[in-house]
Length: 580
Image (tube, rainbow, N blue to C red; front, side, top):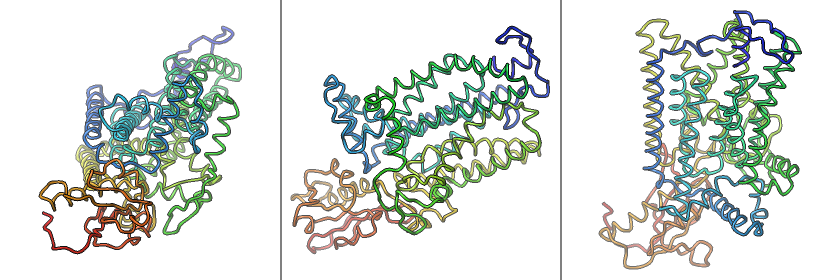
């Protein structure tokens, strides 16, 4: 029984067996969520059904399209890392090369190790398997966002959150080949969900909630050590809980609740550490020192690259204080940015008007992890200026909390519009539907390069061109190669050409290496062949790339009319051949 329910009903249980003062009725928990009215059971079931249908639809879409995405620049080393971790176990812990492979030891290997185990049994190629698995984890993250929002604000808000995250190009577009940040974002939102379940059950959370929190926390730590933030969010919320108990009941009862909570929660710690150790065995080589070392290194990584910010190249290990806030403001959909602003304003008004007294002071505790998850990393970034690469890819875990805030605000505004009459409520619903359709159309038009999405606050992708990072993964190279293959085969009536051609790539060669047909040979790094290649493929992320070699431009992969990759034909002049 939660502290709110127990105090309201005058539960006499305490450490010393004395009667506990009942809580004033005005502070009792409300049957409605803090975001608005409780939905009738039938309507709640409808929204839950829509949420499940949405998740199924996204799952099917991902399964149908995962082959369209290219291999990202980081995937090769991560995939090798996974193989080395597998070799560590298969060798009876003798092959320790994973602990010395580049800088990968500072990161957990959950996704990479699981992939290495699955690949030999997969019907797809190794990188295709990675992309499918990453997409499935991405959908799991959407499901976690739905469940978390539903827990806080009800089924309708949960559906809105799932829809918003599914329609966010920065998240959906990364679901297929950002195999580090998408799993981490998914894990973080599930830790928030189970942490909130624990808070709702204080001071004696259920064993199920505690063990699931430990399991998810351990899995998330086994991706990136930054998951320690999830434990901090829960600890702060619990401290606030005990402070409220002290204020209402006194120190004696607060200490009794703290004892009960600790006895209930401690199993989560060994569970989390055990899971982390399995998928990140480097940390147990020095159980206390290595996790701290990983946290220190990844916060200020000793690698300096240049990244584009507001039209200027800045150093990744010394980013401007506004780098992250500005990128979030232009990369997240407008509805999310506006929704977060509305959520902050409504929360401030709610607190100022004493809404916490009507809903119960402990309602604030339940929202504490969400507020911390959204804003604390930004504050820490502004103050500490950690290393950052390519926009917000390392901070993708902020997208779900902000989507949750925006969804709760949208749900509340929907309720307020319904209070103004049926027509006003229907108008609000229609407006949200139009926004969703527009976002879906935009992402469809950008397929498979949705991750380069920018909102209209910066003028979309066209407005961001030259000011912010675009195709930093080189994802468009995969599509460009496929179109080049089709182009040459059309010249030969749909058949392979009678001779072998050569190709030079300026960009991530891994994106094309596994897709080359027998008649096309990659000559990167081979002197002087690369300068004499028949075709030249370049991505525009590096501005000098397209002009590195001359040739006749024949193909262009673009998003919002902004070129991401170009292909040049450098073969000797010949009679023009129809391509259609």
